[in-house]
Image (cartoon, rainbow, N blue to C red):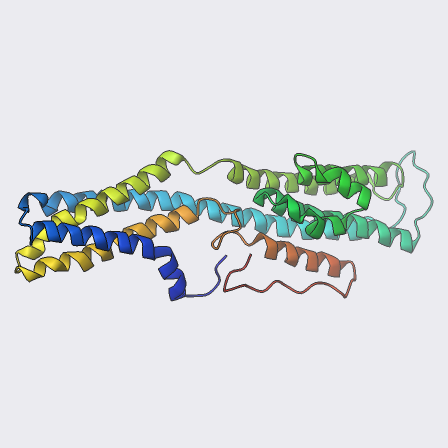
Length: 322
């Protein structure tokens, strides 16, 4: 996610130099054909071109609204993941404290060290789930060893690594651990167990929302025709402008080039902005900063455990927070 208030000129140029060069050459060619070569029939009336431009502006505005909604929904889902992860950690630390009254369960009182280890394993599994979900959405299985494995037992990590949906399996493992704590250890009563299971259900819902965005491409008919209409409009615009500027004088005809390039660049940029917002989980410049969010979750949860040696927050790289 780009966090600087204003885009740097090098980014603007990187995103826009190709259409600028293309539009400059094309509009220059139109002026050359119309003026020095005296091929007047290339020109068309400006009114239909202006009408088309208005229609295209409405269309790409509609398309960009849909693209931004996908990005914003993705960011809201990850905001929910942050809150639910903190809630899960608080429940682990505050519910799993000592032997509770559980019918038919006879369990010895857990020692402080045993409770601390159980807390650590459950909280670490929650951190692993956040990182596993990020890797799953970005299709980066190669990052498992660095981002997920350190928070799991080696056996559990190797078991889950090659599953089709590791984050879903991690929540399943968490549910199994909570069942054991209730049925065999007597560390959770029914109310506490149901409450924690509801939190896991919320995590599943948040994961499902992310997967829905990831696995459902932006409707290609909207994206394709938006791009097609923009290029159709930019192709017709010099043909309509050239006669309007020619009315001011022979040399004024060449003003078609800068003005058509400017308007064409604006339309092309709007189309590009919408395109870049379609898929918020691709690890691009304008995507949801899942790596940074996962690091913030890790810091919060590990400090809840009482740990003091935690990693620092991630800093932006070239004004981009990943």
